[in-house]
Length: 255
Length: 242
Image 1 (tube, one colour):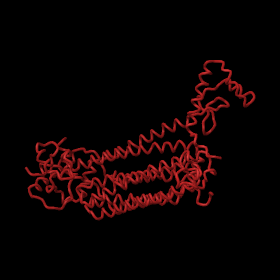
Image 2 (cartoon, chains in turn brown, cyan):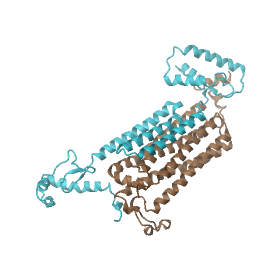
Image 3 (spheres, helix red, strand yellow):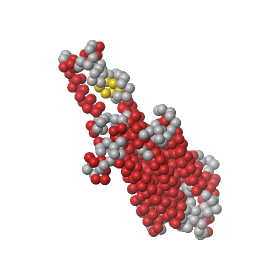
Image 4 (cartoon, one colour):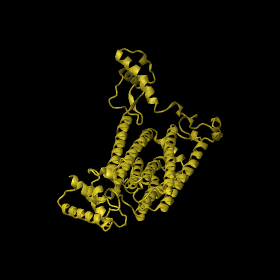
């Protein structure tokens, strides 16, 4: 019996044992076929992504409630954010999603070096995103726009040394603006944690790619990681307009 | 049924490796293919399967051989997008980002939020369909996404429904009022004593001390709980020093 026949009926034939011995290194022994392994990995990842969406949706629901209650405060809080930085970060993240998709493409084609380039670009964009985010957070801290009960605390009253001596603009803002900043920091912070985790996973994938783990026939980890990265992008696609663009007024129209 | 399944598998999964193979297995795979083509017209295949088949044919019929692989018939067959396609999706995403910033500066009142969410959803759909390969993927993955989004919808609908019909107790009238509009909440129980007081001199709230009926007492004792529940919406640390 030739191999091609043996594998054609891999599922329900008595040649199971024979077939089993031929597993390549990357095919885990409990899968019959590469396609089965690939599909299972994808379904598993999508189940995780569905969970991630539900996980984030709690914060979006909280956002919806507080925005209906304190619409004015949300508009005022939103005006304190730096829209230019938000817009630039949106583009950075969209571009990193493109490079992630292209890294999957090149790994599907077995082009190892090209994959390396795209992964490096993706990681670079991720760091760029966090870099811009750092400056945004720094400015908010500086103006006393802190989450929850810290909102409006003058810097010299804060025990954390780097925050001391802030000029607080919080007094000029309507009541309940702290609710906006609580959500702002939790939502963008949780998103930033996902970005940091993503960087870690990409570095691992980069290492495996350089080691030559991936080929035309086996690129599942690259594909799965890119799926995660696109989810990070998806969340930001909603965060940007909801946080930065409430009752947008062109620059200079507010204080 | 199982035979048909195998045939389909045979068809839609093949490698693109160009290495030559033994003539013997080539013959076999060809003969299998002939069988398939005979069967195909009469078998009613689900749309997805049919699409997969088309797909398989697109990808070079000539190297429809898998004899060089130990289990080539079940080789991973994933769609490979083009640079042009991915680039176009990226440009569309940038376009919608610019659009959402532009539209936000036009004052549309409450419609601004709806427009922002719709544009974001269009962008999200683009990312899911093309970057995340749902277009060419196993449809079950799309189902998982749709299920998650559906339950997020349920989450929003039920919670917002609750919140928008939740009332707070107005200490003056004893009525439960909408937080936003200040209107009386539907179905709210009206305290007859407080109603009398409201008709009489305003600001006098001593009526609550003369609790004539046990029912009123029960309501009065329930009130602090409701009040504190309402305060959750505005945490103690909220008020900035003014």
